[in-house]
Image (cartoon, rainbow, N blue to C red):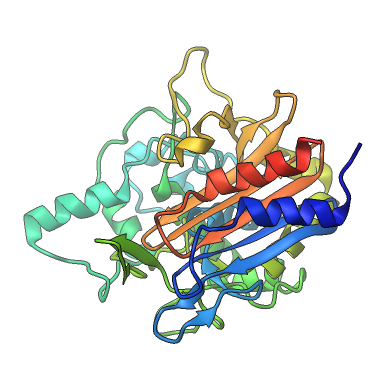
Length: 362
């Protein structure tokens, strides 16, 4: 017999109890089924300096959960007729070298491009030239493109294998800007955030805008928390630059369920597994929390997928300096769990899966 709402709230509250203290960094969690919020809670503080509490309006850096918005922005440009999935990098960026002539927009979206990792390229550049970037002098998207344009070979032939690529999603952000004629952040606001009334979601650009009700990121060191909010790579946009909160992400979840931005047919590409040759290597979710690694069978556009299990799932995680995030959508049960943490010693994926178990065990 299904448990009543009060009992479910009690069990969910118990599953998140004891993870943080009132004066430590913490987390925000949302559990909803269909369009009904089953549980919503903020725990801990968003800023150790002010001790302001985390609540559903607190904005966290989403890190790689940004990729679902980057993918949607790209798909909207395809819908508009301003971009094609089979366009190659030199067709979009004429200065891009020959190794990009077989790398398509689709390869970027589903991580089959073989692009070099831009953080590896940063390390190589700094070994040769000395320190170039820091939390105060962060690498920008156009600099990532410049690093990639200096290379002569990719990691593997496009489409021959799968390997997670932040480089690809940085380029997608630049492609959205180039083909739309507006900044990536402005496109997200005009085409996604404003129509869905996600009024507090933004691409953060240091020195250009501010994140209201902002959570700062922290890491535990010698049993104390140190602020680790920014790094040399925190300014890139398409791979991880969105800040948002539970209330806005609930609206995003509703939009996905109701196909508010794209028709169900158009959105199907996002949940279609990347096509790979038989036996091709897939380094799926290797950097994801251990709790989620077994939940990735394939990747679509901005989503890890496990669609053939009895409980089909689309999900993503975010992991960056000071923040851990997870968004899980159980398709058949129409259950969504969102966990946003501003401390790196919590496993957002494990917490989300725990909430799923609480709701579905009855």
